[in-house]
Length: 133
Image (cartoon, rainbow, N blue to C red):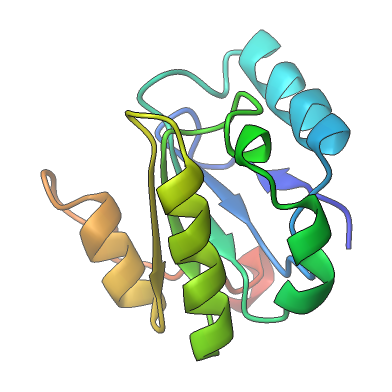
């Protein structure tokens, strides 16, 4: 699955659905660069990423510290299904530069509550397709 953002709620929130692996650095730079250029990504943008289908064993080879700093949102919530996925995100958080916050959650509601802990959370689901709302 390509690394594509739903920009419906940008620049406040970017939503990435159905990620199957950690995106390559070049892919992240291209996507984040385009979003920044279009004004859809800035220093205050949050990201909600559906990582439930990700094979973290295959992703480990590309999950280096510099992949966290590829220009993307500094506050990211990952929705996961497995303890291994949580461990993967925790490792990436340990490797992330100062100022980056990555956190894994088993539910979208918990992820959104964390992302918007300082503001009113969105009352809708973001990880389902738009037509499903």
